[in-house]
Image (cartoon, rainbow, N blue to C red; front, side, top):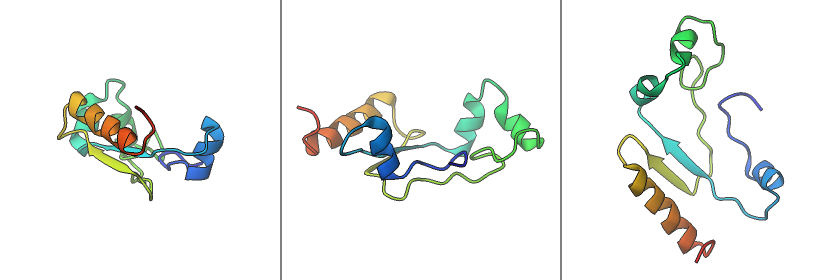
Length: 95
């Protein structure tokens, strides 16, 4: 699987050994990635030293069938967790 490309649902189910998977996409503004990058990977991608870097030299490919998309640059950690818990509760995954 190329870097930055999400796993298909059936592959996720095989890896997790479960019948159902919930796909949650955490989106962030591009500037947030660069700001949080403590290892300098974005600078390396910009200079061409890291090829096919997702959201750097290669566009990010979001999953096609996400059940939940969370803009992490707009939500606190608590709000994001609350959204995930609400989705799992709605699907009767947790009680």
